[in-house]
Image (cartoon, rainbow, N blue to C red):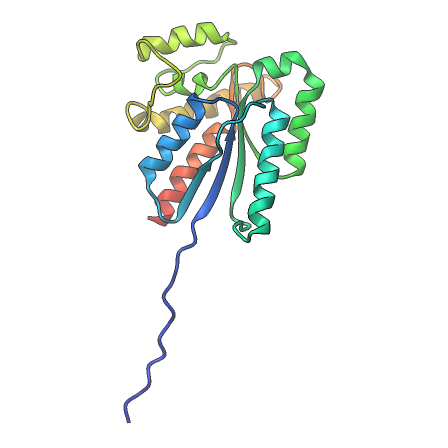
Length: 212
């Protein structure tokens, strides 16, 4: 009598979701969507929420909480999935430190991951090409960036070219900035900083590699 084989049901990879809400309407969404398109992973789903008018940190964080809850209600969210808020620090900190800290505390209490650049997201672009440790204004930062990317514009798509091959260097430089902040006992989101952003990018690339 032939032996009956127990067939296993076909396995199905569930995509891990990375939910991202950005302050900017161009620079950050273009960058993260470009990474998503470049990775093209069946097991990693990078979701960049469409831009809305409210761009203060608290509004971005509340939007992520609401979106995440909707996905939980629809059973489209697992404990491995992550939500990230991406925004600048300079003007928000200067406008009201109390409101800023309230937003940060809200994110921490709701387990929303933070990727904060100070003064702005272009600092992340700059450290793909060079170290930068001194306090800097937005205008001066753009001037430095244009030495590497002539005629830089916020609507430019810079990933994969020229940034992809320089990403690991940017991650290392961001780590050096963080260590400088810690060494000098400064506020973690001081100017300059790329707080959390290197961790976000590293996680995206490592998840892709681990699922390949």
